[in-house]
Length: 517
Image (cartoon, rainbow, N blue to C red; front, side):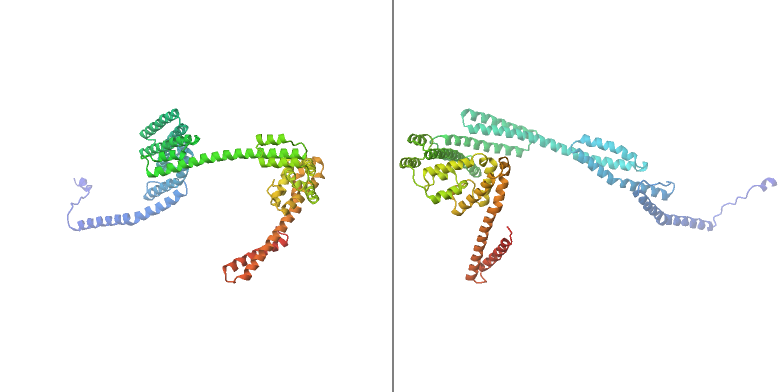
């Protein structure tokens, strides 16, 4: 018994002495205090430090994650994964924007590009970040798809609107054509086509292609146009009558009480404008007919004058030209008088002037020169024609002479009779200089050298002549400015204007004297 009891541990009976309870309470408070310090100070510091390190690692690329068994590791991993996922956002946004731009309004093309890229992008990322990347791709793709689908709907609607509008325009063109023909049959066709136009507008409003407001505007505009086209047809029909009164037609149309004041003003402007165009077209046609008649009369005059110079003119030919070719009776009378009076005498000085500047004259000018006898006129015309045959009448040669006239400030083809004596003299000298140089060239080189020779003549003679004229103009302007300055007070506006003109002209004079152009 004793041995047995010796091995039984002594178990003291708990006794509430009060002291133990105080100790336990103190221990509990210490534990709570320690836990509070850890949670409020230690743990946040650890977590913040881990998040900063994790964010830096995630932003730099795919991070090396730590163990999730510690608070630091969990905080580090969570921050690193999120930072890494967000670093992919700009790439996702850029590539999705590119896909969206390339797809345009093709939703299937956009989806195919996104699906093909999404797999590679997700597989190339770290496993922990894939759910985030998947979500970002999905959301951005849905945004792009929504915009593409909306754009496709708008484009499809605009395509339909464009096609229907083109059809309406074609129908309106037919209505316009039928109404302006102004026959009972064409008016009936116009009304039938116009009703089809209105029916198409109603159908397009019903299916949503056009809004009710747009449809009403199309119908109102069509009805206004139909009224104008019908009025235009009646106007043109009335205008074509010998004793028609198109203005009265316009007045009758504008008296329609259904027209608003604004529509009446617009319709009146359009109809009177159409009437003006009809009158202008008639005037143009009449002018062309008059020009053709005049050209034929001038040709007849030239032919008869040539016959007179060659001694082949007869009274019968003059009469025929008056009856059939429109020759002016006064000109016919003059030819008859010349035919009856016989050849006259020559003014030797005039003959010398014409003969030495022969290229500056036309055959008509020589024929009508009253200071030359018929025989002299005939000889000079024959000489001119011989000079103008062959290379002198080629296209390059004609262009060369036109350039010389232009450089002299003469309208090409102008007759010497309407030129000043100075211009006629300059033309004769320049044309003769050009002819003599061309005649000296081998025949095979004349066409290719015609314009080059003309440019040389312009540079040598015409250029000097123009410079001399410019010098005279500048000197005259300087004198005028000096005269004004002598008459006006220096404070007056006229004085200041003249002073500025004087300075400008003096600078121009210095340039001319220095060889400037």
